[in-house]
Amino acid sequence: MRYPWSVSRSRWVRPYGPVLVLLVTTAGACGLQEETIPDGSEEAGQPADAGNSSLRFYERNIVFASTEGDSVFIVPWMIQAVELADSVRREARGWLTRGGVWDRFLAERWTTPPTRTPSRILPHQGLRLLVRDDDAIDGIVFEEGVRNLEIILGEVRTTWTGARGGSFEVLTGSAYLSDRRIDGMVLDMARASAASEAPGGDWAFLLSGDSAQFVFAADREHGGTVEPLYRGWGRGDAELQWPEVRVDWRKTEAFPPARRDIPVEWRFWTSNEALEGDLEAVSAEIQPGVGPGPLLPVRALYEVIGEVRTPAGTYPVHGILVHERR
Image (cartoon, rainbow, N blue to C red; front, side, top):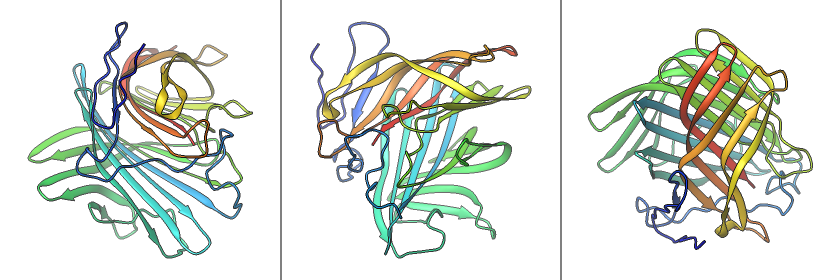
C-alpha cells in the first residue's frame, strides 16, 4: 500500500474499514513554524534527557470534549515543562477537532528562569489564563488576531489519583468559539516524573453522551522492557475504579515518517471481568519527531469511538486517546 504522507494537511482514505484522517503538522497549519517533538532515545520508555538525573518533567493536559449525536468537539491543550539546572524549558500546544479535522492553533516553546514552582502553567503570547487568588485555573484562553477560543472550567465532578501520584479531575465546562457556546466536560490531568524514570504513558478521555465519563492512563510508555499498566476510572450513576487494566493493540498501521507502527484499534479488559471494551480511531493528528534513529519519536492524538462494558452497563463512547513514544 502506498502511504501519501506529505508536509501539508492531507486525508488518507483506506480502501478497507473505517476512514482514518491523518494530519502531519507542519508550517502550513495556522501560520506556525514546523513543530517536532523532542529528540528521543533508541530505547523506548526513556526521556530524551535521561542522561541528567536531576531533571524533572511536568505534564499538564486540559481537554474539553462535547458530543452532539454522532459528532464530537474536542479541544486538547497539552502543556509541558522540563526543569533544567539553570532554566525551565516550556512547551504549550493546542488543537481543535470537529468533523474529523484537526486544527493546531497553538504551538509555542520558550524558556524561563529557574523557579520553585516549575509545574505552574504560565501565560505566553497567544496563551492566556483565568485564575483565582489561590492560583487555581478557572479558564484557558487563546487569542491571536481575530481568532479567539475560551475554555471555562466549571464544577469539579470527581478527582482521581494515578499510580505514580498524578491527578485527574473531571469537571463540567464550556467552550466559547467566536459567539458560540458549547457545553461539555473537561479533563484536567497533571503528571510528573524524574529523568531517571520512564515518562507517563498513553491516556484516554471518553464520554458516553452526558451520562458517563471514563479516563484511562498508563504508568509508562509502550515498547520498554516493562509493559505499561493502565489504571481506569469511570463516573456515571456511580464511580468506578479499575487499578489494573490491560490494553492490547488490536490493529496497527505503519507510520513511515517515524519508522514505527502506530495503534489504530485497541482492546482493554481486567482479569476479574469487571471491565472490557474496544476502541478504534476515526481521525488523528500525528507528529513525527527527530532523533538519532533508527526509530523516531512520535505523538498521535486520536479521535476514537467504541464501547465500554461493565457489570453496571454498556456504554457507547466517543473521545480522545493520546499515544506517545519518546
